[in-house]
Image 1: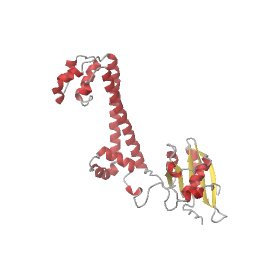
Image 2: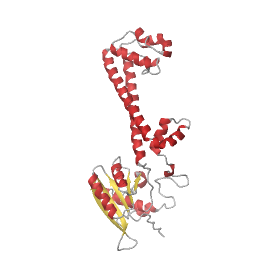
Image 3: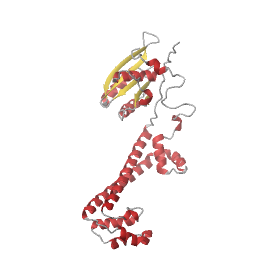
Image 4: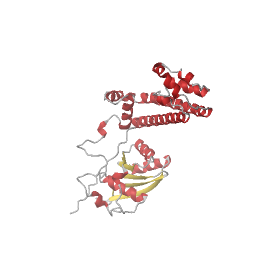
Length: 316
């Protein structure tokens, strides 16, 4: 005897998203046929005016849940607008709602399939943090991007020095430290004498004068100085932006100061790592499943036949 799937969500909408437009499928109980479903499919542009019209239609249909796949970054404005309109929105992993192999694939059929998968409880939503965490995540990720760019620029600078036979990095652990920066700026200004450059060493670097003389003996030319100057300016610019972002992050994360302090107590996690962990995961761990509740986004193990029963039911 074939098991009938239990319709968990009575009024559901599913969106198949693209850059310029989307296809929306709404499935609700049929007014005249008890136990049956009524289905409507409409297309909308992804500009704000059209999305507001979509929200009005969903509100008229008394939709309880709106689901969409995580398609590139196109889901974000749709998700955020509908969330602000008061709808419960689910973001789904495309792998967890994959269509049946061999079935024709169109935007309309994908939207219908997604609606059926969601209404029968065959999937679970991905984690989408609340707005304050999303904004914090944007800033921490941008800071991480700029740090990587600064690191890449430092590597370019070191390669440029290698091209000029300047082996400063073999003696100084940081070529942009106080001593290294002074030597680089002197070479850019036209100083080429390795003994004069070596005497600019400070602190513990003074014990390496002879090694510095050897390392600074090369063929650093005006061409290298021109590029070196641009690279140093780029590094300074990135450092200033990173510092500004860090100050912004400290302001934004103030409401989560207690969570940051707890994470900072863990060995190997500093303040910066704690900030990024909260930006990625939020401060409420109750949104994540436990070993007892199962894994997000997977088909329920007690209902393995649900996907097979959907085959051929697109027009039911």
